[in-house]
Image (cartoon, rainbow, N blue to C red; front, side):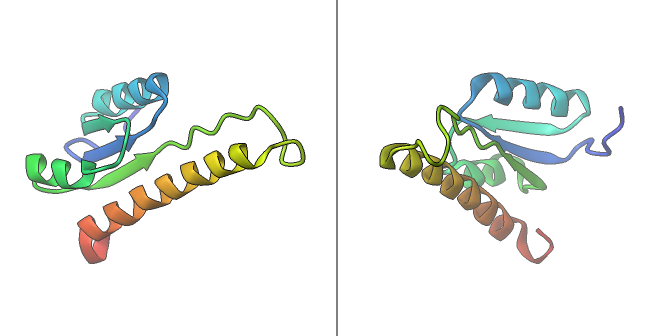
Length: 102
């Protein structure tokens, strides 16, 4: 498979270790410079400091589906929205770092 990402610097963010490893392995096999982290805090700045640029970000949303919206309690809903907010933050931070062409 040729994804056309050879030499690209890609940040992968996920709290799920198995998904993080699988994604990192796939991207690395395609020749990407893959930086995998389990949390976003400081990751964009670290990638740019170490590699000089950031070409793409993949942020994995790992919400556990233990209940439906109708059955979920407030704590479960807050956790789900917190995950959504973290992923949106990852994309925002990456877009700023990539500049007008991000």
